[in-house]
Length: 83
Length: 415
Ligand SMILES: Cc1ncc(COP(=O)(O)O)c(C=O)c1O
Image 1: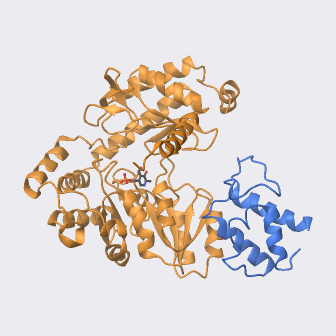
Image 2 (image 1 turned 180 degrees about the vertical axis):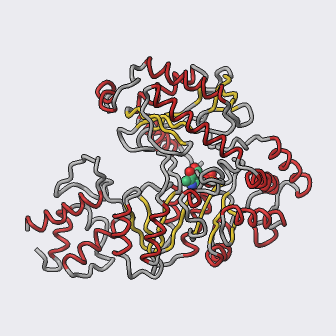
Image 3 (image 1 turned 120 degrees about the vertical axis):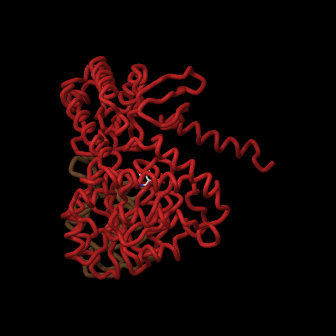
């Protein structure tokens, strides 16, 4: 579980923060409502999860709320029996 | 009386919040034609002041050029004032077609379609050429009008870090299965004045079978040896699938924009782009002026060459004076001050010295990146730039920031 969380958090940091961006991101940081991930860039997070865990996340489930924090993403993955 | 007090209060509160956040925008009133020297009334009601303009997009100094004004006047006489129609009903004149043909020739493209503005070109083009099977992959710092255009389009979206070619390549791989992949970037980025790496972008596009879109609003007319734009500068003339640009900056500065590129894509815009279909195009007087602009800059590179000399003089001068600028080669030269209030105070002091330039800070640029953006023009003569440089040096000394590092300025003024 904490392993999984870390993989996702690391991806978010690498993908969405510039090198000189020293904002702290934690497991419960709001990603989309907090302006770290904009709505145009959300697709790469979804693609990352799908490729990494070989799942298909239906668009209806890939809502901004479901992706709004690492914790929320963990809940979403649980629906696919990934923990 | 639906606009009752309760409703009025909603908006008064929102406006008060904007003021409290320090981002309320005030217009400055110019009481002269646009030029290197202008008459300004600021704040409203204050006495007029004669100042040197360092913040116009009048890169080629053609906004009030006598030949352009004369051509516009002739256009007014020969083709009238307005069209009272959108293009495809009865709003297309011979001169609209002539300007479109001249733009294609100048930009080195197959075809061109005019829009009321480049904002409209960007708002309309994506929806006209892409659908849900496609993907738009944009640089994270593209202009707001592109962001709006992408929102209106049903294609998937993704972004790459600013000018990060490795990241772009990852995204092209990620979206390998899309019907059409469109890479989207500005040619010259308006806040930092840096240029897109179009040569590398084109190489990646060829490798991954993607198309390339460039908004060259801050480059058309002066970037590249003969001023054709960022694609000329990067050696990829003819390889950009969609170029959008404006007539509202270097190319006469009045208004209007276009989509220029592959014949079929331009034709799709004529069939489907909503700002083209449902809004009047550029009026005859502006079309005539723009044709004169293209005539002038197709004949000689004198003006872009002068702009280039002014740019090197200005960049070298500011650096030697001990100010921190964003390195680059465009006539957009940001003087970095980092602190938002300092950028405002600095601009006010400059105004007192007869130099008009504007401070930009969050949310227009990132936090801690406040700056004064200066823009050069071929209308600037050496004496203008000497005076402006003296003023920047004087004000810089007054604030004690000459020959200081970024960290020293931040330590002194905060972020
Ligand atoms: C990069 C870019 N694209 C488009 C526009 C909009 O141009 P126009 O004034 O023709 O709508 C601007 C103007 O600010 C711009 O800087």
